[in-house]
Image (cartoon, rainbow, N blue to C red; front, side, top):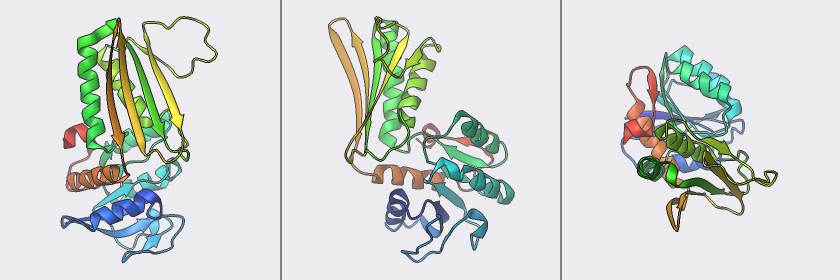
Length: 249
C-alpha cells in the first residue's frame, strides 16, 4: 500500500487524483496540501507540507511552481519521494528539481500521460527517418485557463526531436514579426488557448508534396491523474534519483 499526499488537493487535478485513487487497492490518500484547506473527503488538508500530520510514502504535486521551494524543503528534510507533475517551471526550478534528485527519489516529466510519452517516442523515430528533409512544426491546444505557453509537453516533444537530430535545431515561438522565409533549422512552436480543451498536441513533419502528422488528444484530466498515481506507486522505496515516464513504461 502506498500512502499518498496530494499537493494542490483542492484543485481540479487534486480532486481527480483522489477520485482515481478511490478506485484502486494499491494506494490511498492520507493527506492533502493546499492554501484552501476546506476538507471534502476523509483526509486532512493542510496549508503547508510542514503541517502534514504524518509522513506520506510519496507526495504528488499538481499545484503551482510557487509551491516548489516548500515541497522540496520538506521532502529533503524527511526523505520523502515526490512526483512533480505541475508545469510552467523556470530553468532554475528545473535545476532545483534535478539537484534534489541527488538526495531523494524524484519523478519528473512534463506530461503524465502514457499516450503522450508514446508520442514522444514516435516523434523521435520519425525524426530519425525523415531527418532534415522535412520541416517540423508543433501545435498545442489547451483550455483558456492555462497560464504557460508553449506547454511543457510541447517543449518536451521539441527537445526530444532536437536531441535525436544532434541538437541542430532551434525553436521559433512566434512568426508575426519575422518577415523572412522559414529556415531549415527551425522547429516551429504554436500555442492555442480556448474553451475547455484538456490538451491536444500535433507534431507535423512537412516535406515535399507530403505531410505526416502525429497527434495526441486528451479527453479528460483522468489520464494525467492515473499517470501520476502510477508514478507514485512506482516511486515508493526507490533509491535517490531522477525518474521519468520512460522508465515507468
